[in-house]
Amino acid sequence: MTRTADVVIVGGGVTGVSIAFHLAGAGVRRVVVLERRFLASGGTGRSVGIVRQLYPTTETSAMVRRSLSVFQDFANVVGGDAGYVACGALIGVAPAMRSKLEANLAMQRGLGIRAEILEPADVARVEPAIDPAGLGAVLWEPESGYGDPTGVTLAYADAARRRGVVIEQGVEVTALDVDGDRVRGVRTASGDRIDAPVAVNAAGLWSPAIARLAGVTLPIIVGRHPVFTIERGPALPAHRVYLDLAGGSYVRPETGHLTLTGSLTDDETEHPMDPELLGAEAGFEEAAAVLERTGRAVPSLADARYRRGYAGAFDITPDWMPVLDQTGPAGLFTAAGMSGHGFKLAPSVGEMMAALITGATPPVSAAPFRLDRFAAIEAGGTFVASYLR
Ligand SMILES: Cc1cc2nc3c(=O)[nH]c(=O)nc-3n(C[C@H](O)[C@H](O)[C@H](O)COP(=O)(O)OP(=O)(O)OC[C@H]3O[C@@H](n4cnc5c(N)ncnc54)[C@H](O)[C@@H]3O)c2cc1C
Image 1 (tube, helix red, strand yellow):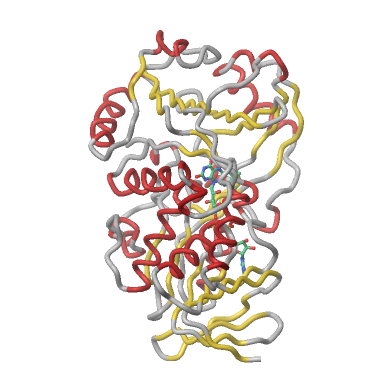
Image 2 (cartoon, rainbow, N blue to C red):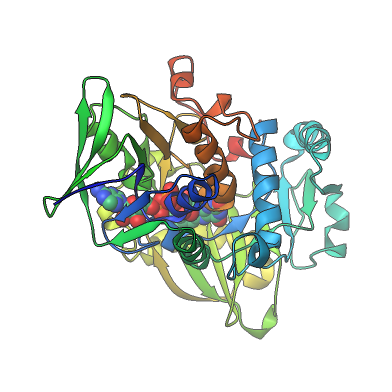
């Protein structure tokens, strides 16, 4: 069967459905999202969903600021529930990073981001559970927190459908039709063809494979990032999001007296992962190293009961920032390489991609997200440097 569309989006994670929602909002009439499994079955469904605002560039800071305002008013802006919990986030840095943090904060305040630097000795005023030993400063972001990545995806999908977008699940894209230097559409595993002048690669961990269908090489590594669930019990009834850049771990509260924790040690690119292993059980030994760091950062969690761990993964570019650009043949757009930031950036990424596709001026400059920046950038960026440089 052959159909036609104005835009075909490959991937029904939070990125793909946000793009669809914004495209339909911009007046693009025939938008189709194709998802090979089910909505949010990729990285989105495994995400920890933290929304922090500390980013080192004006563009990414502005994007996360815009996204936050969407999460804060999600029912009105999108519809449905983002599950956003504004518990506040703290980010601890080593003494050597303090001056960078101060400079970064000055830049971010100019963009309207609310944050303040706390002396380590004052952290207890905001979060008594944190052990400030060894920290040089702690950034306090009162509006930050976490949301529900699957819920946000389903809400964007519903809102996109209300705007006329067609979303098909269980449909795998197996080929991109390219004629000369132009995309002409996509083909699916069942042999169907959708002719369209624009195709969007929003396939997350699978985006390099989709790009290869058009002969495009994306500089994206899929790197393992396991997540562990611990039972904090009544000893620590609730806590804020805490990202300990100095000690190398993070914690984020979960319902049912649980806490999600993981590593902030920049080792994802050293552990390339087959995306098909997403969600596989993580080993207890792997957990033990992370839990030890977590217990140092938040001593009341040192004795928390280990529940389980699973393998997550990030689609990582050399500078740990996404590719948001037209790439390869005309009409082939890429929104991938989210490098662990894709949940919090999703509202802004959708807005930016819709502007790029329709030829409008994006609200935030897309220049830093162009694919050709990698001609001048060597690998060697890190996750931690995506907070502060
Ligand atoms: C463990 C973990 C923790 C994270 N924590 C945070 C966090 O705290 N804060 C934050 O902001 N971000 C976080 N992230 C990152 C963020 O969740 C991701 O960047 C984001 O969810 C990616 O969304 P996506 O739509 O780009 O990709 P995905 O969710 O991976 O969606 C891509 C979709 O494409 C589909 N697909 C693939 N191939 C095809 C094909 N051939 N045809 C059709 N469909 C196809 C897949 O099935 C998948 O559903 C985390 C990620 C992980 C894994």
